[in-house]
Length: 170
Image (cartoon, rainbow, N blue to C red; front, side):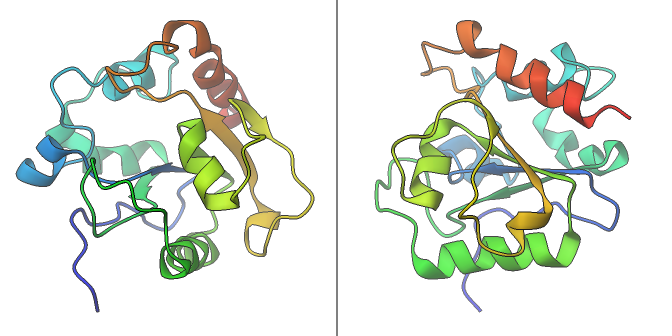
């Protein structure tokens, strides 16, 4: 078994699985997702109502209380490694989805979805594709704008988070 920088945060009953690209340097250092001090991930979740308040990165496992799981497409690398995801990376994600069966899989950033599907025609919003592999066929899929401080499009693409939150509400 290969070393994963951050463990998956998944459990029975998750409704949403958020898929990042790979751990950031601060996340790898502290062992929690989206730990960069300027990352807007935690505030985005609260702003759109996916969490009742802004959690800190050290509370990442509490997302399970809200039916939300976290993983990264590339589990063995840290941000800055520009290598594309491997077949093993893709297979691991498909296995995770098959095992936990979330209602929605959301890629955190269009680039991650583009890498996974090997398609440059993907943008933020609901992802409607008919050539999707099992077990993704049983899930709704979204691409939400990256909450990274480096994303200059974040504010004008925040609608993608709002749309995801609306879809997830009962």
